[in-house]
Amino acid sequence: MLEQIFQFLVTGITVGSIYALVGLGFALIYNASDVVNFAQGEFVMLGAMNAIALLAAGLPLPLAAIAAVLLTTLVGLLLERFAIEPAKGASVVTTIIITIGAAIFLRGVASLLWGKNSLPLPAFSGNEPIDLGGATLLPQSLWILGGTVVLVALVNAFLNRTLLGKALLACSFNRAAAQLAGINVQVMLRLAYGLSAGLGAIAGILVAPITFSSYEAGIMLGLKGFSAAIVGGIGNPMGAVAGGLLLGVLEALGAGLISSGYKDAIAFIFVLMVLFFEPTGLFSHKAAERV
Amino acid sequence: MRLTGFFIFAASVVLLPVLFPDNYFVTVVGIAAGLHVILAVGLNLLMGYAGQISLGHAAFFGMGAYASAILTTRFSWPSLLAMLAGLWVAGTIAWLLARPILRLRGHYLAMATLGFGIIIHVILVQAAHWTGGPDGLGEIPPLNLLGWTVDGDQQWYGVIAAAMLLSIWLSLNIVDSRIGRALRAVRGSEFAAQMMGIDATRAKTQIFVVSALFAACAGSLFAHQQAFVSPDSFSLMISVELVTMVVLGGMASTFGAACGAIALTLLHEGLVVFEDYEMLIHGALLMAVMIFLPQGLFAGVSQGVRRGWALIASRQRHKG
Image 1 (tube, helix red, strand yellow):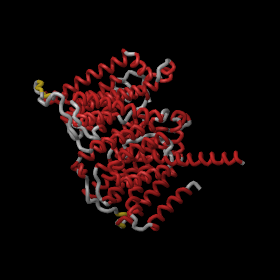
Image 2: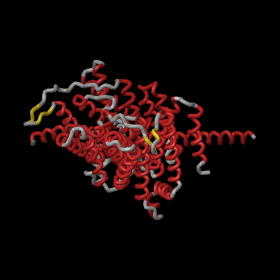
Image 3: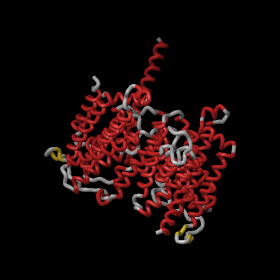
Image 4: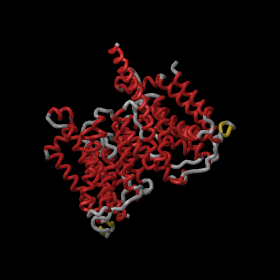
């Protein structure tokens, strides 16, 4: 039993890492613009599908992965330029619907380009499971965990140590004041979209060898990432990471101990509970009512 | 005078099958459009007038449909009683949910309603013992209204058209009632409304329940008309489509929501030929309407026409 729970924890942390990366992307965009980007999951899908397509076109895996991340970042920038910027100052409901529209649009493009089947990406370093005293771990899980740690550390350092990152954070506290202090808010917005698209793409490429990918793979991942951001306190990047890990572990435990079919329901019941009782998130130290 | 638009709309709904009997677009597409109108008009009460987004409205639609489906097939309940049970279930759940959920705003409300929709969808898929699981539930008996069994597309058109007109009439009246005015005040400023003595929480709860009842009623009709239900009809995408209908028509307008529902149904029908491009066009349309016509297609178009007229008129004046 204990071994089993250990195994669920390992699985949960692996999946949770992906949610954490997606949630981090949500938090970055929310910070810069107060917009929740419902197309975040599509960045994850595009990263994976681009990598799969480029690999099939003959590129070696590392090159295909880098090119896929760059391509997806470009999509993020285009989205910001042609869908978010023209609707500046629109209401929350309007921007939610715009990004949902963008998500459906990107899904449509993906299904036209790559069909509707699930496509695999080969694991980065083989499929030989590693024994961890009772629990087993795929080498790809190590890639996911390592990748998440490195990316989270990089984003954290970027936000807290570099001038550009601090400018991005300044936008989240008070955009007008940031503008007055000489920060180009427009550029920050583009930076946030580019960054979070890139992050999403990397998450997608890391997880694709385990879950495969298809045109609609981004829906659930995006929603879970959004949940992670909400659990962590929306707009709090490290809270989103913690929220993602917590969500992943809870989901894996729920799937293992209660029912695997109800896995998604368990995750969202948890999110609803957080919203009802602690709407500013579990790890938020900001003042209440950030609405 | 207030109901002029309603009578014109009602007359055209009645005239259509007389002018085009046995027309596929009237009877088959018309039935789908009618159900969508009921759903959109109900959702519009919540989104347009109360200003609360719901990305989980398909859940209430599903509750009505599955209540009818399960009770009539597995327990041989009479269809009308099953429909009432569905309304009761959806209404009760909406009432229980309203207080905690409507306290949330903006993105939090979007997430909560979305999560609720997904939870209900997962239950519909997983509780296979009751719902038939992903394969759905078939052989639902026809709707029986006090001895009259609804049969065939023509009769169904009549029933759904009647339900649709009733829902529009109800919505128009609710909007102009005490609670409708209270809601508009709340949407303007919840704080100011409360200072005027409006119980905002109560008003929002009531409209949430009403909106869920509209959806459940459409669900029951849908289940009997199709004689088959499956979870696919109540997924997240359907919730998003319902929101699209309301937004397309321009929020806070009953006829806007109705027109949005009809327009999107026709669009889907038209896009059947371009099945592969449907998602692409749907997404692009959603973005384009929200970016260029945030007031909705119809408000936007009528505004454009008015502006155009004003321009022409002023040019004429300059010439004269």
